[in-house]
Image (cartoon, rainbow, N blue to C red; front, side):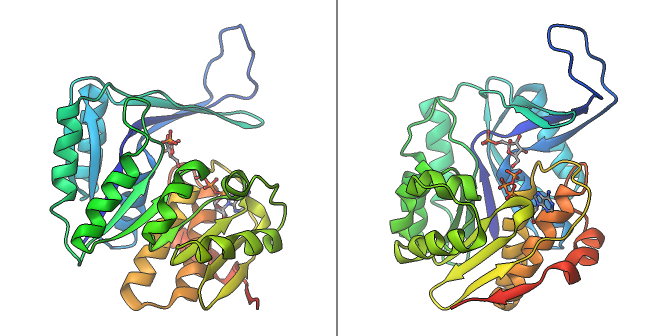
Length: 304
Ligand SMILES: Nc1ncnc2c1ncn2[C@@H]1O[C@H](COP(=O)(O)OP(=O)(O)OP(=O)(O)O)[C@@H](O)[C@H]1O
Ligand SMILES: O=P(O)(O)OC[C@@]1(O)O[C@H](CO)[C@@H](O)[C@@H]1O
């Protein structure tokens, strides 16, 4: 069973305006809301691809109820720890550029945290836990390592999609997959990553440091996949960028869905890139039809 963990879920409020007038009243041209947070997006795309998962994390208040109800309506199992304060609302403002304002999230208690750890300790060696998204400021910075240690003790595989500073701490535990974007990879090595070749060079170092599979995404510039046997560069499909929110999460979900079913990692990578672009070309997350339509546009080149 796949479990996704979102420590700080959200209601994503995606609005568009023709132009932002700072210091004035702006009225939206379009507005839509979705249950959000990186692990939750992974669960939603997995469901689109016919793979079930259980979404874990902390939810609270009316916004938390919205997140839970929305997932239930999509047929996604949830096992959230209920907290006192409201789940955050993240604003995604689309004008000539995309601007995001992410909330801080609710206060969490020792008891909330202990409940989550108890849940994670129930995983077995047949399970995969996807830890995705930022760590709320109210939680100890070691929380990912603490939860990963619990996974290791039970033999469960785990995936991490988080910023460079978190990745640094979890590599030694041998994650099944990590998916930094080129900024996060650059942050990790304190270097500017400008091309797929740069990403391959530094991605290989992440494999040497413990990651079993690494995908580095470079938005419209391409993506790379590396493990101990393969190094592959992918082109990304061309199309109109509508909202990149959840594009990276869609890549994680699609790679997991395909690699866990048949173990063909290169094809799983191709599917992952198509899923990232299918989300980037949509308001909301990718549909299966859109992913399959874009698949032939993803060209793979094996490198040495
Ligand atoms: N402008 C674009 N054109 C085509 N595909 C895109 C574009 N932007 C993003 N993508 C697709 O989305 C994938 C992930 O994009 P990106 O590298 O921005 O990751 P990310 O920063 O993790 O995404 P997120 O916006 O979810 O945080 C890319 O590999 C690509 O497939
Ligand atoms: O604040 P975090 O946890 O870093 O990111 C949260 C978030 O921006 O990531 C998702 C897209 O990847 C959105 O659904 C959500 O709003």
